[in-house]
Amino acid sequence: MPGRSKKTVREVAISEFKAKCLALLDEVNKTKIPLRVTRRGEAVADVVPAAAGAEERDWIGSMSRSIEFTGDVIGPVIDTREIEALDR
Image: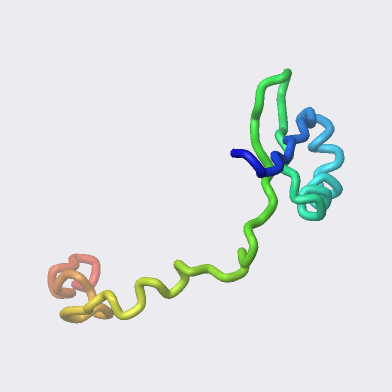
């Protein structure tokens, strides 16, 4: 798209990522530039900066008040008189 600056993806070997993981994660967070982890030149994973407002989870609580319980949800599923181990 015209007018948009394209951020480059930095590539790092998996061995370097393993050795410098915390520092590389801090760098991605600070610069907001994604990092591609490679093994023998093949992409293994992309580390991308966290989205703004990642602490806010819209899905938490999104199902509240959408479930209706019917019947006894605490009691046993079957009649306890049918359990042979309790006949003693």
